Image 1 (cartoon, rainbow, N blue to C red):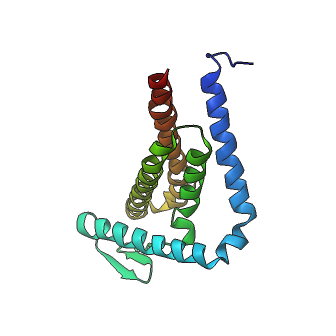
Image 2: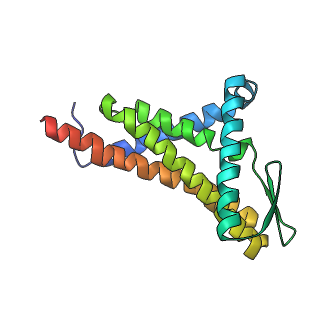
Length: 179
């Protein structure tokens, strides 16, 4: 039984959300397993250091004077921002990796699209930390709101955009070329 072509985008979007939500809850359910797994801990720690170094470089060179200590940035207004394992982006990398891996499409293109997407997600994460520092300095009362309700969900907007590019521009164009 073939799906009506008019329903295809809705079916694809539903599959996107099922994969993203399933692997979100899977990650949350096994968080204690991951945080005790040395491979996960070493990758997460490495990502935290990269994120901290890259975001503090941008903040120091273009925005504010900060004091760095460990993985914490201290700002002139007595605010601070700490990079923790939850900030590393590893969960979003895992969700994106799994999404593209499971979603139909040519494997040769997945070999470059997955790493490129992870790089874009990392740049998004650096951007997120820099924007949170701007909020901390200018609207400190809104930092929690910006962190929880604007910038964290922004990751999923980027993941959706990457998936859309994969699904509509790469996968479908490959199918049409082969017909």
